[in-house]
Structures are given as structure tokens and as C-alpha cells.
Length: 66
Image (cartoon, rainbow, N blue to C red; front, side, top):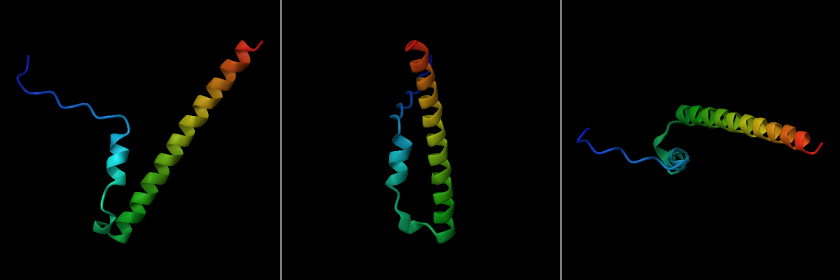
């Protein structure tokens, strides 16, 4: 066993909360544009996951409605 304390678990979505609290005044324009691109990519990734989940749900609903 290790005597080192375990790191506390992060709450789901905590990273997003931390990102939204950052001081944007510290960023240059190029950094802000890069940040926007990264956030837009994350939105696309999240939307893709929603689409997959809805598709799976629709398939299950169709199967059990027969």
C-alpha cells in the first residue's frame, strides 16, 4: 500500500466548468481563435455522440414495438 493520498476524483464535467471560468483577457487573438476551433470540435464530437445514442435508442424502440 502506498502512503500517498489518492487524488480526489474529478466531478463529471469539471474540466468544462473550469474552462468556462478562465480569464479570456489573458489570451491573444490567435489563442482565442484556436480555443474556438477546439471548442467547436468538441461540440461536433458531442453532437456525434448524441446522434449515435439517439440512433441506438430508435433501433431499440423499433425492435420492442413489434
